[in-house]
Image (cartoon, rainbow, N blue to C red):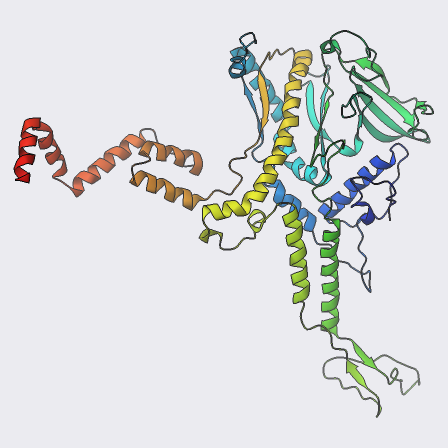
Length: 533
């Protein structure tokens, strides 16, 4: 069992880690962080490499139920739904500041083209979708921007996701302990026979290791630096004893001209004050998941014994008449066992129902799902939902919706900053000036609840019948929300068809209207007076 002397946000995970994978290039806090990633990955993937059960009576073939995977995937359906980017002019924002520079149409078009190609080339839509479950279970999501000036024009910038096990933020600003002044990517390697760690380091001007640290020039004028260096894992954590090693990828500290923002964008799940990393949505549920697996294994064991049967006797083992040696009992259909007079041979009465197990397991699963903000509507197990009103379904779904909206705000905040900073990279490495173009990360928070097609159809038809909705509006909704495709001029044809249908139902309506329209006001008034008399 792992050592939990140091109390960290990962304390609830450490009792379930089978082995402590200590690394010489991380401290105890980061060691527990890395072990928690392994644990939550094993829970999700249903592999017991680091997640062990304590089975009662036997440790043979325990059952590991993919509870964590079901919970995470259910929440991932709603987090980041329909994610994408929005590229537009800053004209609306500039209205509040007459001195602000407004992006030109050419700059907006250039930004739309560049970002569109970047997203397609780097497959960011699929990367995002596959990354959401990883983020929910690991709690940390790192997006990494790089550039290679030697590549062909239009392909020099890359955006990819890196394993958070490699990411280590630096905080060397004593005036603000929450400020990240640098970032490291660490990777284990070998230099000859020496266990080493290869470190890529990015530093801002606010870090003491930056060559312009302490300068009085405007901060906007200070680009970040980049360095690659291999170190001996021994004494790596002690800067005074750290030993640099020769490595073919070593690169001296280099200034990245024109780039002022650190390139790793860290999205923290369930972020808390003063904690540099996020917290997994599985954090605190480890014992519940273990209890579910334990109950399934105990139930499986009980069913086996109930089906096979367990017997007891005080007569001793049977004796082979030929050899005089003790032999085995022969049990099975159409067999009769003879025992000596005064001895007993009986079956042990076992359980007659596994319903208590099932009730217990269901209770544990419901607790875990409720903790995650998931209801039966969210996970797709609700029954008779068609009989419920829309407001009832919305209330049952609201915990999931609130959870997803909050997580979307975290995602969009960080990725919007990344897309804003990417304009610098395009200017430096691709020569594309995007000016004050606004690029934002967006998700669909309005349509998280599954579309109620039948209810929406009824609402539209009732609105048209009551005269609240025009046919033009109803047709536009059917196209946008239902996916119908209507031919050009369909609304005009529909209006004409409805008019013809009404005329056929009341052939005198048009004549009455025409005659009434030809009468003078005085004639109509006189007719009304005569009718009253």
